[in-house]
Image (tube, rainbow, N blue to C red; front, top):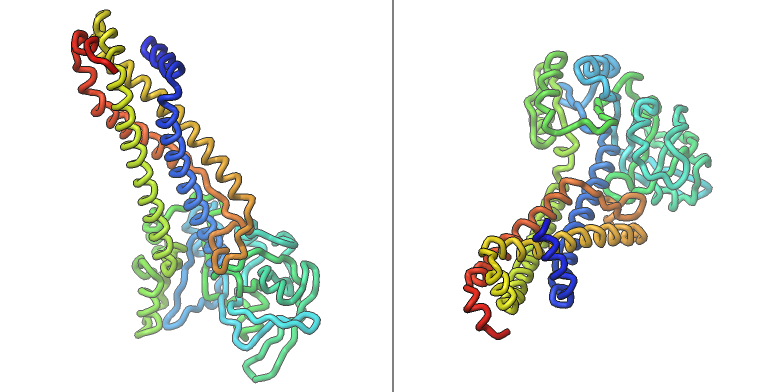
Length: 428
């Protein structure tokens, strides 16, 4: 405590000499943390959109030579019986829209994907949607529908309005079915822009399938307890009630066999949301690598800038060091004073950097970036929502603090070895 008192007084009396070191550490830490918060928020937004699109944390897909589950409710019960009680298990059907389109007051909108869901079971999952109008809370009727904001703009339609689903059926006839728009969600990404969510009961009717048909069993953990590390455990549990295919890194590994030679016995496979996003893995890896390189470069700048500047400042204080030694201090005591100064300086810089990074995150939230093509996959309600993680804050601050202090120790070791006579004889 005594040494920190001396060092703090020294910093306050000579603050002009240390202001550049403080600014280097503050801006370096601020930009590093800001970048980590932004990347984490963008990836989190993409993962949330993927979970909604794929039905949760992982899917169970299977069949003989095609993705199909007849009497799907029985499979749901089997899966639910071996998974934790907090897991929400639901059936889904995902099909192409074929020659179908949506119509409203003379306007038409084509879309790519029809997804049939169990409205009652997927409420928790759809709470993560960014709704522009309406919500998923009132979804209950067979003829309710959720559409994306881009489709709503094409049709100039609002929540509560009734649109027409125009279907070209297998007999080459045209059916028109009225639907009520219960919600319009903001998503122009690869996951949501051309996707429309119907009741699974209607989609089975639309596809001329049996009433209890599905081609996916979805598993979602609303409390966030899911981890990809638990997949082997879930796979083992599911193997007791289903004939499970070995764990795969990508769903294509399973499809090659399913759509190739097929299986003699009905076989199911776990497809995690991570493996389903394999096509986006290159983007994710690139973002992580870029952020790490930028952070590494900033840390190097902090270390080099602080250590070199501090060495110059210490050399200007050889007379002061000589006085310390002349009154009985040994080199370890001098080390403590100088390191206490460096620690105070870095601590203030890191804390200020954290505050500045939070301020930058707040400013970033003010800008709607949904106008950027294909960028919406990284956005939450049209903006980048930086994600603060305590582990990231600790990692950056500790790494910068420790490495910089170590560099300072190396830069001042010659100065503290000087004798009182040499120090007092030196002119600044």
